[in-house]
Length: 252
Image (cartoon, rainbow, N blue to C red; front, side, top):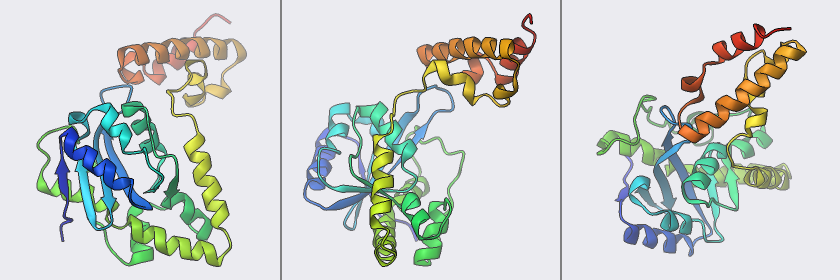
């Protein structure tokens, strides 16, 4: 069964959604983005569910101030695995939800590890979510009806998850644990990685000898700064294997 939704691709309609968010206690939200060909993620779609209405916001068509207005409210944003969503929203419009309920984080306090949205919905609500195409280019327009329905399904059950997980947290007296963990996530920096620390992302970087490690740090910093400046994936500037090779062949 497909999920009903309303497509939003102009600032006036998006502003109306933002106004609606000011009148509710909570709303569900998810994002779709691309970073295959760029360093910085490109926001392609924002899915918002308010009550029994689902809105698909065509982010590239909307102005940053209007997108930012979505988060100028006191409502709790319900998300699943929110870290990347918060990062891409901050980058796209300079704003993000300030109070969140991350269903993946909260599920960790009722016995789960790091469940996917599909597995959590199946276990807690006995509902099977549709499977999406991992290769979907969310920046392409128009999106197909199936793609839109799949995107809408990502927020369709978040309110129910919030409800059933909250009940279990209350029974276990762990509501404050989940609240604090979600608040900590919101406070994490959403800026790009510090280039001086980029070498730590390299596999086996810590096993390099001191001089080789110093070279790796310097080259990785240059690569990160170059990728950020050009907005291109770091692998296209210099692959990890080549960077390690340069480091290991440096004069000892």
